[in-house]
Length: 325
Image (cartoon, rainbow, N blue to C red):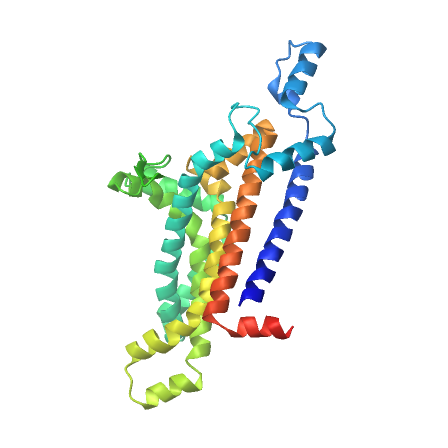
């Protein structure tokens, strides 16, 4: 187990180092932010002074060394637009994105897992066929269009839920959340559902495929021969075995929910990291762009690392296979 853990941590560090270089150089070839920050009336001397104050007059390799020194101590630079530390801006928006991702993941599990189980246990029923046909829509429909349709139906036509914004957050143990009030749940319902639709379809298909595979195994047939009830067979044998791949995918999908919530946050004006990143790209705010992407990369790598460890705990064959390799 220790060698498995060391190998995974080493791989995670290599990925982070590679992404630091790719992100830094990739962002620095996209335009010149100085022209987004200056006034058209400024002369060349004033422009040069502004560039020097922001460190944009230095060679790119020197900017990289400065960035790496700051990264080592948790300083990812100051925003060109807001004048605040980039990491501070991101951390102020992270609770909203984390809240949205958690609720979306819970929706995906609570809706997708029972539907997938039912479709796997009753593959030929009309309800199961309807479930599987509906899951195709979750993969096919674009997120921005679904978000607009949800706003039009539930907010404009029915007036049940608010279209944009976030409920008033409250601090709990230093973490701000809006989920402690009914108003907060009303605000998060539509964006979380919009973000969860693709994951619901994914879990439905995973659960159905896993269920169809498990119910044909010998130990399930033996459990039936012993006279165990269908409910107990599903809870003890089927559900336990299909959860191994689902847990793995859920960990990876949670990272994608954090990373790719830009469209949903923009449509619903959700004050999260994705909306901040889009605004930074529009204004060429390099420190915020680099810091946002790096935070997402580190979160993604850490989530993958945790999933790998949990997977090896749930299925020891993973450790044995790597040891033999």
